[in-house]
Amino acid sequence: MGEIQLLRPAGLVRSPAFSHVAVVPPGATTVYIGGQNAVDETGAIVGGSDVAAQTERVMANLATALAAAGLGIEHLLHVCVVLVEGVDVAAAYGAAAGALAAAAEPPLVSAAIVPALGVPGALVEVSAVAAVVR
Picture 1 (spheres, one colour):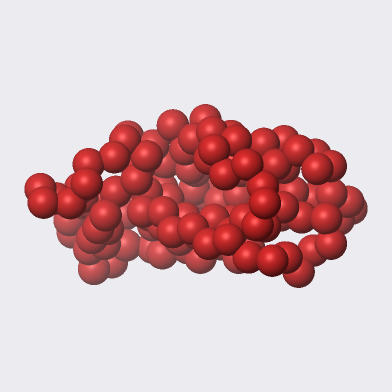
Picture 2 (tube, rainbow, N blue to C red):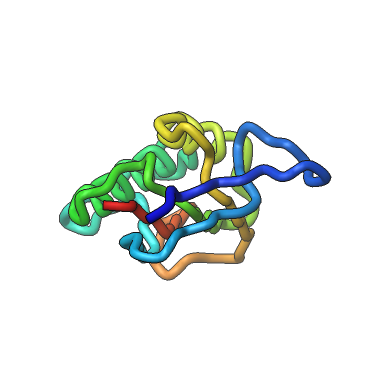
């Protein structure tokens, strides 16, 4: 069985923040994490109108979801970030970058700006795919 590879090939922009290609070998365990918002265990929004504070909580919730599957942030392959239009994108990404620094290679990242999210008051939502060779 091979290793999971996160690639940043020549000819594509080289960023320390994201990779371009994930190669998952046969037999790896893949885990899908649904959209995480900045909510506590009761469903209350954490961070108010501060997108950085909300993003920190979202990343903590993502780590909790990964841990439930026996994985960590370092196992992320792809992260999809959805932000509400008008928020400080740099502040959100800055808050996420701290959590993602645990990975030797950064995951693939997709992002979108939308008018609103399904959870009232939520400014950011993150879904993800992770994998591990066991």
